[in-house]
Length: 530
Image 1 (tube, rainbow, N blue to C red):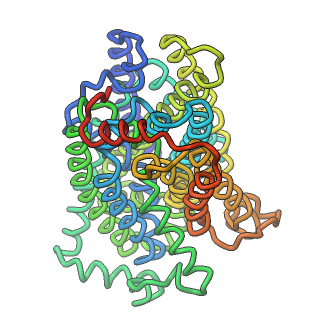
Image 2 (cartoon, rainbow, N blue to C red):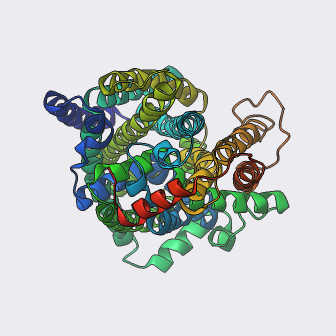
């Protein structure tokens, strides 16, 4: 890329960073320092504001960069990510949003601990939440590195590493100083920018093909080199039975994982009532659904206009398809229009990454402080002390995410998020649903449900082709691949539910009927909700 691209994109990105740092500084001057302020923003956000923030939190680098890249490279099989990410919100809307808002306070563990022994449950749920959050953060870091590689012409891997470090440092600042209130406003601003950018690019793609979507699809298929197979299922997941099982595994992870993501669950606590939480989800579904429809157009547009070969040569995982599409739509390399449009898209993508990492880091640091730290202390932690621990945890989590982000920089960001969804669906969703709906659920069942999903999910990822055994692996020179699927959800999600059931039926502890009844009334009516 030319100096004009670099300068303009970095100026726009710097402007967004300055605005968001200003929001953070303003909020930090007006905060009360309480746990409710830091974790939930004082529960003062309206359903519309929270809906935009949820959409901003969910429409991550995986959505904007990864899904479009997968569609550009693999056609129909790539858009399955968009379908899975969107359908997942039906589970959230009908089974989770209102009940979690009524039963919990700040984290997933609050919901489970309402009717169980707190210490073992909080340690298990906190450990799982941090693991999921770190995996999700890695995907955002990889997206940041890919963008800078494009900006700087892939001249230096060190530049990618320093970008990942810079994004990590900014997310720590956002979380440590501003807490949930600053993070929410950053996500709202980012959602508006992202929707605006996606709408503009979608209109330009459709104008290029005179509004004929069929012509767009046929052009994409012709340029892909695969012909009609590009528009049919099976290009990626239909080669053999292993690939087909991998597709089923991915679908399960995407549809069930959203309801177990810590940073999504924590957003329901920022509104005053369960009704407001449900309305927030309705707003979010509208925004997210519209965005994914546009992502499909952008992915096939990149295949038709830029070409899969050019996309793959820029980034093997396809993470730079949308910026390259913007460059072409604006008039090509070295043109003023191309420079401006590319710079805007790169800046919006950076804004996307910054907003999402702030939300995920806040959720994971809340799990460390509110669940792990408070449980491991002999006496109850004071609120101010707990918030201080959360700020320190944000730094540690940032360091781990930076290191893993540098290591995984050549993997597709949507694929990496799929792994985070698989772990969330395996470890968090079983314990959440059992706690809300099973009268006989016990503490042992809760702990077994978390670890029975978490340990197999992480272990299977480590033993899969993602880590070793193929040229695309994290460690291509090594081979300890014993699990054939790239996504562990098909095995680990049923194991999580099975472990929760087995732990409950073998437990000597009698279920607390009174606490279950209290939790049921609270979840359905909001009586006694915080």
